[in-house]
Length: 146
Image (cartoon, rainbow, N blue to C red; front, side, top):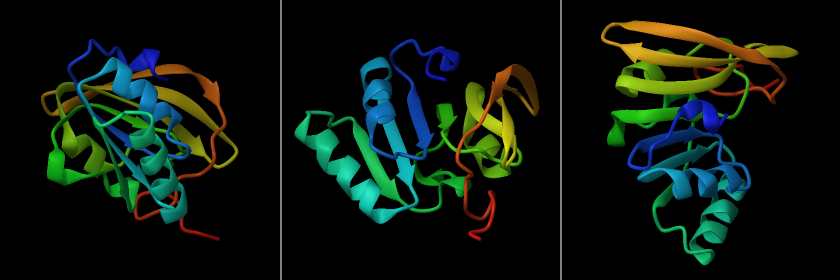
């Protein structure tokens, strides 16, 4: 997924799904600034503390509904979604810069297609990168909690 973002070192990146913070650390090494949103407070707080302890000060970890993105720092040059989504959420497209790239696992709960989307003006170019299975995204633009 990281390679599919085609990072060159100076991008503003939005990560949906912080988890342990590992991906955020990789993104911080390869881009300019990283905003990462985690739905679960305990995971977000732990990741934020760990990243700070390791010296990753260019990463901002937020707790909230990542399915709505983070408009406060938009537009983003890159967006990476690390949970399965039923479709590319409109807020992500709105927050993606022209020429920006979004990578997400898109499909149903049991199987997805890793998809790279490049924003071109008012349109989107989609590229299928292969099959995958991720945990489901929950939130306003994901699946409801069961």
